[in-house]
Length: 328
Image 1 (spheres, helix red, strand yellow):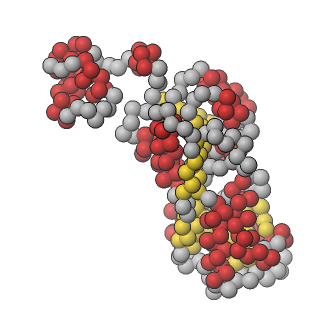
Image 2 (image 1 turned 30 degrees about the horizontal axis):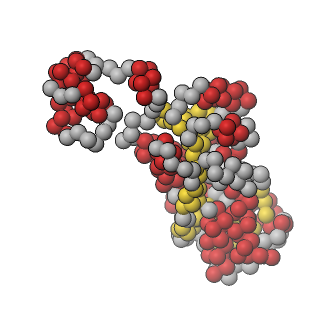
Image 3 (image 1 turned 60 degrees about the vertical axis):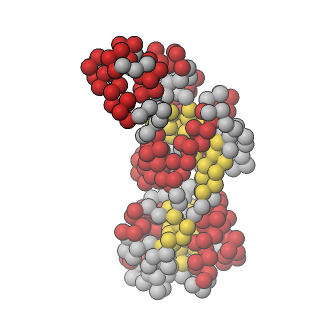
């Protein structure tokens, strides 16, 4: 750095500011220093900088959802997109850590205990029964994407999520306004807290119109939606609306309804959840509850920055919106 400073005609402190992306230098000075770095062939020693600053500039993006589910569900891509976008202008580098199996959890645990990351953003805390306990005992700043039932770790982590119950009320209210009286809810895995909240929201509006006999649990994908809708129609019960806990479930349900010769939305309404790009491409275009997933990733980075700066853990709840299209 002394060599670079001498070549550029600036102080060593200015070189350090340029290397760390500080706003306290002018563009002319930044260009001058970067040119000197090229001429000197200077390369930052991250090990040395880590020893000097106590920072690695690495952020762990922790996922405990099964590997195949993570890459099949566009929700994760959207949240990750927001995280990467928010980290891009900073010195911090994201490290994606998969920890769905016992072997993966052991490796991730060892890595985190070595203190090789400055912070953690946990994308799937709601399916984590192992690492959350470790994270609660560590001093590494951690942000959770998604709420936890009963908030067993209240005050220990910052949290960002969209309120599933509020979102599902928007969907159910849309059906009530249409005068639908025979709804069925097609949900994801029974144990997932998002499903618990979404069902609660549906029932807040629809009440006795949605008893257990009119609720089906499954997976989040198209196959599950198609099979569940087919089974519901086969029972012969009257059905004039399907409340689907994901857009993928809804797209599968639309396929089953088309096969059955039912007109959407004249005979039966269908509402999804998430507002993934596939919702606008479906036939007919899907009315759905829009989650601010990219914003969730961006807010998670903002919360992590606060923690790294010494701030206290806090929670941000993001708004949801009903996107009306042609299926309801």
